[in-house]
Image 1 (cartoon, rainbow, N blue to C red):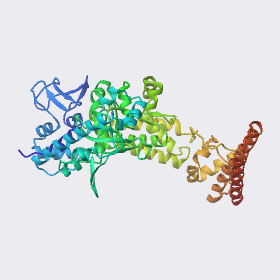
Image 2 (cartoon, rainbow, N blue to C red; image 1 turned 90 degrees about the vertical axis):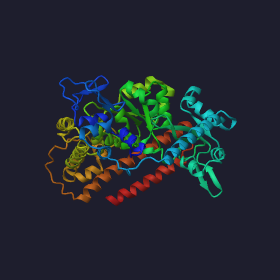
Image 3 (tube, rainbow, N blue to C red; image 1 turned 180 degrees about the horizontal axis):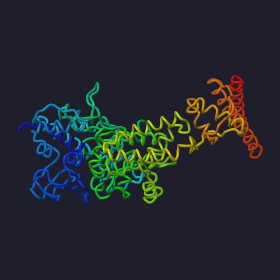
Image 4 (tube, rainbow, N blue to C red; image 1 turned 60 degrees about the vertical axis):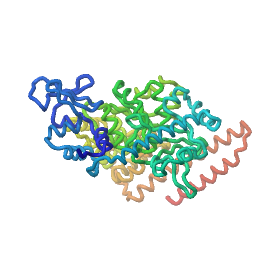
Length: 537
């Protein structure tokens, strides 16, 4: 019988949760590891229809019906295979491929691909323990990798010469190029990975389909990955997922970190449920794969700005996948460290505390709105509300969406009604505040909220109640109001420079250091700032 390419049907099974597919027709309730409901294929009052999300199949203990998302759709919709695939592809948001059987040529090509990547992995692993790979072995051991870990994850070394293109010199060039391991140059084939610490990338079946290579000389980019091939797509591959599947099931959650070494160290220190994206930002496909395994997910990112942005993006991606049994949290590793360093220096206990302190999604989204918008002004509050409403509108479960909306309405009433905000971090100290300055700032914020948004962190440091009535019209136009705020910031900056200059001078007198260049730099900056101030007044 004519059928779709197995890669596409496998992609459907990976992308779609059988619980989501079945629950469109059968109300399900979770008991233990399975979901249960009344069988749609025969009449019954006591549920005997079981759905296993992790394994992706259903089974009725009453009538014996058994299958996956495709057979369920065919049986319940009374449609043929092609129509069922089309319906599921639409549900998954995937483009339907041409309806054709997999040719013997395709089958042979895939078998050749896996054979070549497996042989390459073996060569890289052997090279790690040769004199050529000594510096790579020393690096990986310095990072806390034991020989057992090296063997388990197939870590190896790609030398500077072309061992892969030489090894497969008698293989058809198209086959070896198709793996991404070699490229064609002016003088023939050459290896894509050279002088790299090599990490094999496995598919969900445990087959090596690609590699990630880490530079050892400090050059950038730090990691390079196999380019997308017929068998490998970065956007649909999570590093370490083949090792993590059982642990995700046992731990009833998944942890996502930013890099391969972080993922390996986490798995080897008791967090076997950890995975990482591959050289690309987290994608909807990554989320779909994880949610099919388990809807409880902890995102663990660096605490810097880049990590916060990555977390905000992850939050937006996972919201459409939320269900009433989801527990999504966000953990941050601060102090310029990463999970690898935390584990090597502080051990699993320190990492466990970071994971245990993870912030629930409902709080993370709320905190994001408060950080990104000036909620002590009418326009800022409106923007924050629009942001929250747009995000929770992505929730497909209507009742769950309603619960989120009720929670945020309560928080808005309790925390925003005074139009007052105390920022967590004030980036600049503020001048000593008298009543004239306070009243002027309140007047400006109430009359020109667009200015307040631009200078929100500075204004927030005054901790003013903007509901206070200012019974005076200062008659400041928009330009004058902004000039006033800029002048306040310049005054304080100049004061801070003068103070720093005095501190450096006093320090030099006590320790004898030559600080003339530093004093000269500060004097130049003071002159520049005073010139700017003179232009304002």
